[in-house]
Image (cartoon, rainbow over all chains, first blue to last red; front, side, top):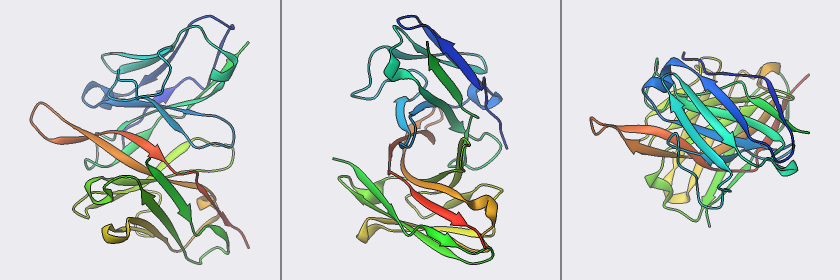
Length: 110
Length: 126
C-alpha cells in the first residue's frame, strides 16, 4: 500500500505561522485532504482537494502542494489550533476507494 | 444537517464477532461512498474499509477476510461485521461520508471524508 509521511510533532508560537507537511508518491496523482482532531473528539475536515477549505473552517487554514508533498499552513496560530493533524489520500496501489492516512502531526501552540 | 451516529461497540473476547452500525441522516445516503476509520488508543487514524454506491467494497490488509462492510440504503445505514477479533482491533471506530471528484479522464476519485460520526469504542480483551 502507499504511504504518507508526516512529522510526528511540530510547535508554533502563538500568533505565528506554521506549516505541516505530508509526503507520498500518491500525492503526485491524487488529491489530499487534511483533518484536525482534538482530544476525545472526532476528526474534522479542514482542507479538501489539496487547497479547498470547507464551509465553517477558518481562513487561517490553507493548503498547498508541490510534487509529492502537500502542506497545511496555519497562519496566526491560536491556542485552539493545538491538535493532531492528519493527511489522507487515495492509496495509489489499490482500488479507487482504498484510502491511506499519514501518521499524524501533533501541533503544540506555545 | 448531516449526521452520522455509530452504535454496536463494546467489550468482546478475542476470536468473537461484533457488528457495528452507522445511522445516517440529513443527506441522500445512497448517493455517497461510506467509510470506516478506526483509532487504536493513543495512535493515529487508520482506514479500515469503504463501500461504494454500487456496493463495491474495499478493505485494509489488516482486516481483509475478517471484516465485512455493507449498507442498507433504504434504512440509511452502514454496517461493519467484524469477525475473528484480535486485541489489535481495539479502538474507536468512526463512520465517515466520502466525497469524490472527477479527474482529467473523467473518473471519480476519492477526495475527502467530509462528515464523521462521534465514534464507538470496541475493546477486544479476554
